[in-house]
Length: 51
Ligand SMILES: [Zn+2]
Image (tube, rainbow, N blue to C red; front, top):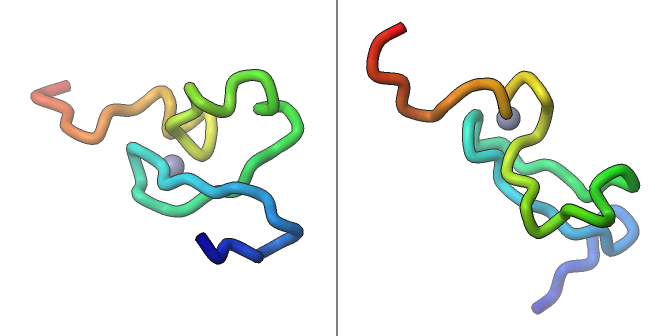
């Protein structure tokens, strides 16, 4: 795959807002489990029934 952007850092799409976010140092141990771009998004759900 030709992924040569921003110093070859991997990217994912946020499960909540759908925006791409880039690998960060703080995620190096848990990158496989990271699904959200921020704490804010991790506290939300893509489909919320009723709040
Ligand atoms: Zn997000």
